[in-house]
Length: 261
Image 1 (cartoon, rainbow, N blue to C red):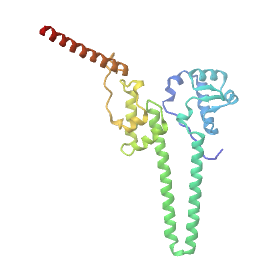
Image 2 (tube, rainbow, N blue to C red; image 1 turned 90 degrees about the vertical axis):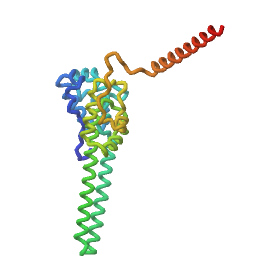
Image 3 (cartoon, rainbow, N blue to C red; image 1 turned 90 degrees about the horizontal axis):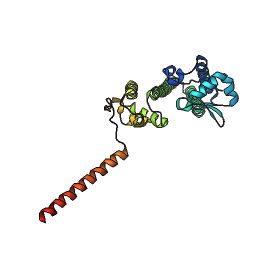
Image 4 (tube, rainbow, N blue to C red; image 1 turned 120 degrees about the vertical axis):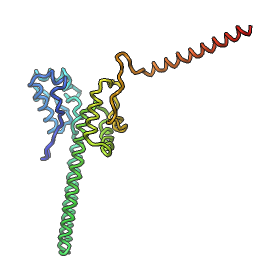
């Protein structure tokens, strides 16, 4: 395991989650400890039977599997939707590799710069300043990328529909060119809390972002029993209207025949 510190994300509203309310204090604590364990060991939320029995007491096992935070599978057990919110082992490894490559390139660049400076002493001050500027720019760029990832996760956890996360993250980066993180976050909260939003018609995260929906007003009131017509209802209504027009046409023709007769 690498010496760098790993973090896992936990929404600050998780203790009020309906499923979390059903847990005892011990089961709640052991669930958090299990998430930490998965993050440290980069197992993508997968547990063997032995690990499951070691991490949870018998009572906690029953509570967590009953509410669905832990599920049995053909390999043992899995933490529900772990990779929807946490980094996978592959993502962590890619990040470590990228850092190692960046460090290697930076070290070579500095070494080359010092070698050149020794050959041309008069250029040493300007060369060293240039290296320092480059290192500063790289550090700031890395910090910006990390900060943007945190912003997206804050937004994604508030958005009422979790789907196509990778596509949503790209759409979020695009939306941030024209809107602040606060605007996107507040827009997601309003959309999630809108009493007229129907779960089955909730927009995909990327669709909402690409449509610039963070500035939209409240959805139209459904008026109690009024519901958005389904596709079959629309087709049925269109068919009835066609039948009514055909019937009216037949009646007009019949009246003409009666007059002429």
